[in-house]
Amino acid sequence: MRSMLVSDLDQVLAIENAVQAYPWTRGNFCDALDSGYLCYVDDIDGKFCSYSVLMAGVGEAELLNIAVAEEYQRKGLGRKMMHAVLQKAREMGFSRVLLEVRVSNRAAIGLYRLAGFSEMGVRRNYYRNARRSEDAIVMECDLHAGNAAENTLG
Image (cartoon, rainbow, N blue to C red; front, top):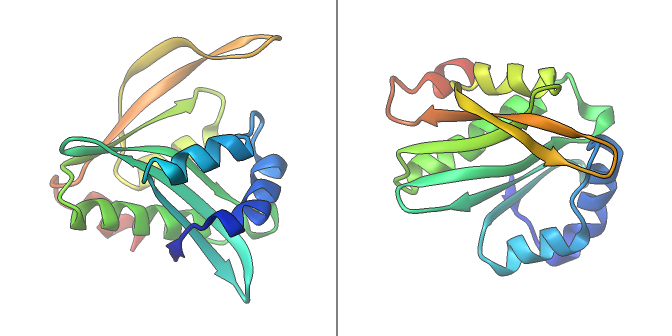
């Protein structure tokens, strides 16, 4: 895993557009990089397999985006990236990591629970587009609570 660069965005966007129902734009990723968010990529033999975007706050961080290329899904790479992100957040002194996830994204919810995230609440109609809206589950991972993520993901 290494820090994402602007020169990585073509490969990142190829993954994003293939696996996300409502993908980020190049502008979203550029804004994240320009804002100093913690953006990471991981590769296998030079081909990107996963990436993540973590926004640092005061004492906590928010996982804004994480994805695994379709051909690498179900091979443990999501767990690997999640473990690395949570470890980085711990090293930076954050007490917890927050995220929102679509209620329909069962695979992601399972990964987050495995990583030690628990549900905090629901944001009604959080995800909106021209066709419909969808609730978001708000989840948190307490980075000091028994290191659950290290035990299950590492």
